[in-house]
Amino acid sequence: MLLADVVGTSAAVAATGSRKAKTEALAALLARAAPDEVEAATAFLSGEPLQGRLGIGWATLAELRVPPAPTPTLTVGAVDKALEILRTAGGSGSAQRRRNLLAELFGQSTAAEQDFLFRLLTGELRQGALEGVMVEAIAAASEAPTEAVRRAFMLSGRLPATAAAALVGGESALAAFRLELGRPLRPMLASPAESLDDALAELGPASVEFKLDGARIQLHRDGDEVHVYTRTLREITRSVPELVELARTLPCRSIVLDGETLALDDDGRPRPFQETMSRFGAASAHELLLHPYFFDCLHLDGADLLDAPLLARLDALDRAAAAHRIPAALAPSREGAAALLDQALAAGHEGVMAKALDSPYAAGRRGRAWQKVKPAHTLDLVVLAAEWGHGRRTGYLSNLHLGARDPDGGPPVMVGKTFKGLTDELLAWQTREFLARETSRDRNTVYVRPELVVEIELDGVQVSPRYPGGVALRFARVLRYRPDKGARDANTLDEVTAMLPGSA
Image 1 (tube, one colour):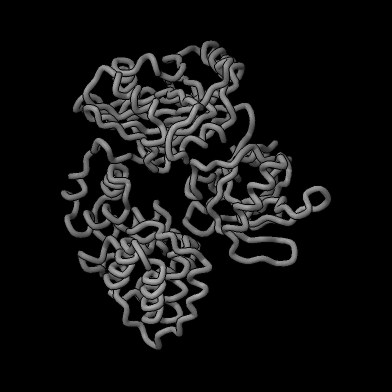
Image 2 (cartoon, helix red, strand yellow):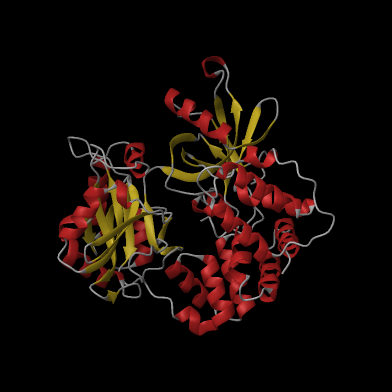
């Protein structure tokens, strides 16, 4: 398969807002791919090569200035092989060898292919092939049930491997995926609830738990071997030795736990979220200790529990890690649930989670079986651009352009702006980060790659023609940046418009 075929499909997907049309275009391409091309083609269309980020910056590629090839000759396999050589290039003189390899690759590419590779290698490929669309396309191309593809993806965590299994091995290959100790699962997600009473009425018998202002973790233990992952499936084991040691003391041989971790002050109240996240980027531990609070058990001593109801998973959690379970009440009355919400807020946490006791663990999906109840309205939005400040903010990028995720896989849709809630320290930090992600600028505004997620507190939303999303945020202010989340974790435009008065 030629790279030009992938580039043409990417352009077609980017040009349409129809989820059905995106799915059909992607499925048609995947169905034509040779068995050894499926993984690379899926990765390219998903916006990241199989090798991940290769440390190749915008400036490096901009300096190449290689004339494009007149006709397309590059194959998907050849590009994948070249990127693998780039990934492994190291040692003395490797920087020049990498430049030479890039120049050779771009010299064999047409103008359209050069543009595609530029955006692929810099993380700016936003043609709209989001995970949900790709899952549907893989199912259509392989004629496998969508749910079978979705489950295999949940267990593998990798779309290219899922696509290869579906298209080469069919439904039986998809069914062969199992929970594997040491391989992270995509986390189950929650939807916002209008109120605690509404959540309980919808869910029926439920577990009501503290919603902590911490960072999501997934902990795997197999004997003495322990791995800890973030919500984006990044491994942080070396940075959290206290969690590793705790895992080894649990009364079991193997376990997979889902939970939160956070740093506490001397009074037992949560420290700022950024302090917890600072540990995840550290090369080794330092004095700030992290405390784990687990709320789910996905595997225990050889038994996979993903399909078991939450009630059974909580029983396993109590047997293995009761001392580290998140504060919770099982099937409380409305009065008991309200009291737990008050306790959570008084302790400095965000609110509570209500979870249906009969629900399985639906990894990677934001369904209604888990609902979060917080007194303040918040949204996780993507930063699209920022305007230069005035007065004491002169020299800093201040007013944020905020985007919601397109549920059909297109680029984020702008829904508002805010410059409120920014401390001097945050202004300096975001100015550095934005300039490192700059894609273009005009007289007042710097446009950035849509990858930084910021948590916004707001009074609500209102209909407005001012922004492409058709809504505007009311009294929005920055709460914090979310380095634990990527753009795919941001709230969708549908979730934003659901906050309009009368939309319930």
